[in-house]
Image (cartoon, rainbow, N blue to C red; front, top):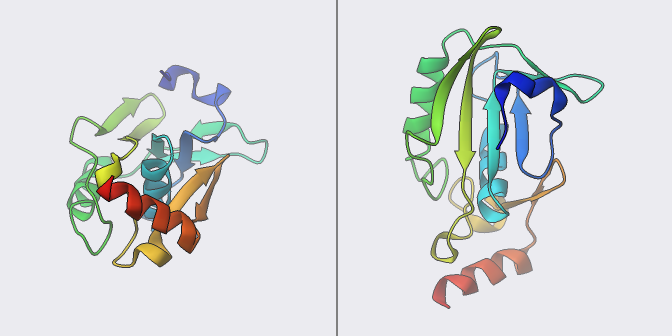
Length: 151
């Protein structure tokens, strides 16, 4: 498990994504959510920036609780994302000496829910995680996940 006390030692990777989010809930959050759900799960940190040397630094959020509530509302909206995998225990505000951040733990989706996709079209809104990148899935990858729903 990871510790916020050692945030500067972490780097973005296949299971960790940092987003500055000082301008509000970033739209790219949903691509990462989809990618983590369709891959191996992961943790999204809002209010944390990735520096040019790839180290992470807590920037903090002005109103983390309000942003968390917006996230929890939007994750339940099927026009935003196809599946709500995050309970209030998995999405929370964490207070640090450098400011409040949001920690979102996205689990790996069960086969019956995959693909988890952004918007209404699985062929254009399904992502997977490769390294620190969220990549759009190809139609055959989406088909394979849809077939897994029946199996």
